[in-house]
Picture 1 (cartoon, rainbow, N blue to C red):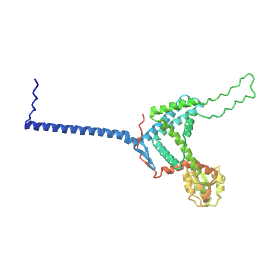
Picture 2 (picture 1 turned 45 degrees about the vertical axis):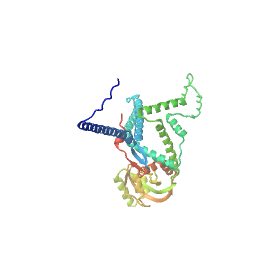
Picture 3 (picture 1 turned 30 degrees about the horizontal axis):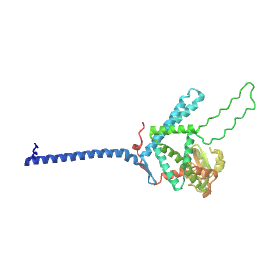
Picture 4 (picture 1 turned 30 degrees about the vertical axis):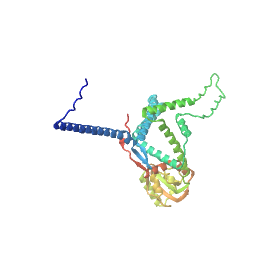
Length: 383
């Protein structure tokens, strides 16, 4: 016999009102829980974004608008610390093999100790040095691109091989000459042959080193090789800038008398004012024995120490300076002639060519093209 359907529950107005209130409270509660969960997720997400995306992506510097990210900066600091630590370990190992009480080893002990101290000093200034180097890197890469300078993968590979001491085309070894005379009863001592690194050994060393970089400091192989690519760009840009160094420039022809103290310099001035000959006094009194009559010849800006140069280029022909103090002592300077477009001699030209890139970088670093946003909190902590 079929069951009769259950009659629907009939709620009173009071019950219906209460149920509606309960459902409304539940909706409000669920909404509050949803908002709270969303807020928690938002806070956590924002924290994650700030810590792992925004901060690492924030620039430590802009070079012509191109950012140098905190992430790349920190990676380079870690790599340079790794290099310094390896150098320190090698130096300490060499030092441990020496006996400081032995007279013939004391010089080497002192030398190694000085090298270790230099590494310690470098580690202190490393964060800012890395920033400067990375700014230079961007300046070099951007200028190389502007000049259509190209670096090939093979050029990079040769730089890598050179670092590891591998020669892909070693010179043919010359045969060891046979002694023309040997003392009777003695056997000639053979000259040892230096074993050159094989291709297999180079690849093994390279692979192990790259693996160590990735495991210990998180530097990828591409980032490691980019350092060598930069070396090639640097060399090519240096050559290009050296070719553009002008062969003439503003120069002065000057002579000087160099003495130890200001009192001696004042005495020289008094004798010059009394009419004594400059060249004769230079030969008699000057500490600079490498010049005849104190004559320095023609020289451009950038060749003398700053204090000397500023005075020399401020004098007119025939004028003599007051005492000028430099690290060498006190100078009395006399300008014999000056020329705004004088041919550079070979030595001065080569000096300017060798400084072409460093001078260009120094000028670019101080320009509006470089904007710095570095702060100490961007430096990765040491482990």
